[in-house]
Image 1 (tube, one colour):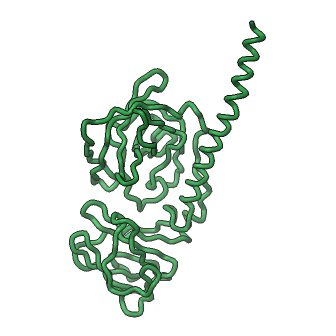
Image 2 (cartoon, helix red, strand yellow; image 1 turned 135 degrees about the horizontal axis):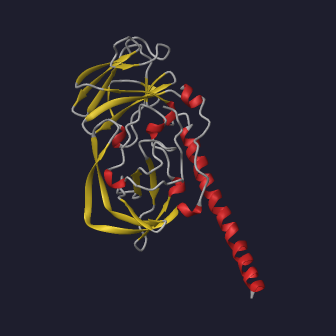
Image 3 (cartoon, helix red, strand yellow; image 1 turned 120 degrees about the vertical axis):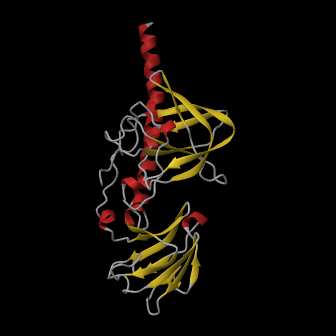
Length: 294
């Protein structure tokens, strides 16, 4: 009996070990892709500025006091003007500025913001600029591929991959999707839609998270959460996690893929923060750790 049990155990290990190795390899590959995107020429680590625009006229250039200030090596003192009406931004280049708009010499144009899809891209030398819209505010985000933060980037620390943190959750749909006001690092809030609640167990205890859906045309569940590791090894403001939409009332939450928000890497991001209902009392010892950049 003992020998049969030993053989059975050995057989199970022989089956499970390759599966666990394959799972770890898949998470490692996912993480490698994320690190590559962070360190890309136009990734979050290339951000060097974010300036909010005022209603009416706003100046662009390297002159001190410019509304949108560019490095002296990238642009003349006066490079152009942004005109803001509501959330519409029109750009007028200064003659001889040398600025490009979507790869062509810039002319006076209304600029498409990031919230409208792929934004129009202004370029001053290697520096790139585009309009961002957050609620009723519009601003200019500035990127430089030679930003020292990008050049010195060496990856993101994380917990060892642990299959135990790949958890099956039950999806409890709301009768109708609910709109929540999600806080942001700007001190504002943004409306986001949640289709229901995810309930799951860790160590025999019940927990829940409320996911959001960012884009109904390409639906995924987006979770913004904190846990007992926040500010104790992981980023203080919390972490993000994506999951596939429910299948037969079930959702897989793979906390090994929990990752830092952009605000962990730059002061110029506009991250959402975890709502109260997504602040877990347990320590989620999986996924990315605090990179400790600021």
